[in-house]
Amino acid sequence: MGRTGLFDLERHFAFYGAYHSNPVNILIHTVFVWPILFTSLVLLYFTPSLYTFPAGLSHGFLLNFGFVFTVIYALFYVCLDKKAGSLAALLCVLCWVGASLLAGRLGFSLAWKVVLAAQLFCWTGQFIGHGVFEKRAPALLDNLVQAFLMAPFFVLLEVLQTAFGYEPYPGFHGSVKEKIDANLKEWCEKKQKKIS
Image 1: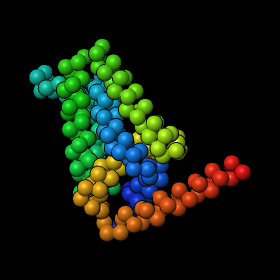
Image 2: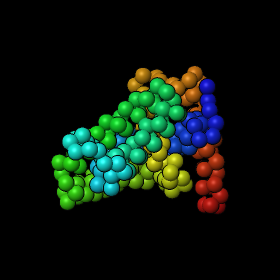
Image 3: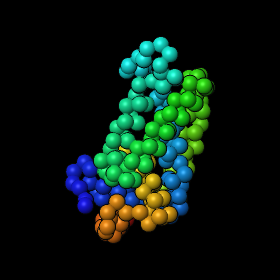
Image 4: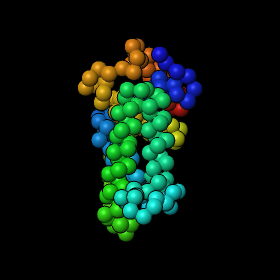
């Protein structure tokens, strides 16, 4: 059953989906969104630790801003949908673990260069997806927080739906499609008015 407010998955998914209706753009985002999250966590590894483990217990893992963002994303996804959200939460934790291990090995002086190159590559791909294929500005220009928070979960749900026909609940995709179609129609009408 659908929820309202902050945990209204239909609303979040429809908002994000209205900016990602072109199959090529969706594929580009599917390939690049999780690497953006992963490399962001690599950089956040170098933020100050919020808690210091006793000597020998941390094993290179720090309770820093990377950990905080991982927990926020994971809990938010589980609250949106228990099944797919749990998978997304697991992927977030795996990203944090992998990013922490990689960052610890690379050290800051090399890690920031790797992160910068990966971020530039991934963001360029996404902007090409929007400019060339979607022909619509990215969602982050209209709602930065919602776009960043929903992007990893959106692409995971797209993959689960396409590969396995997954729906958080019966009628979810039909309802979301109606909302996306209405949003796209409204956007096209606004665009047409600006032109004329």
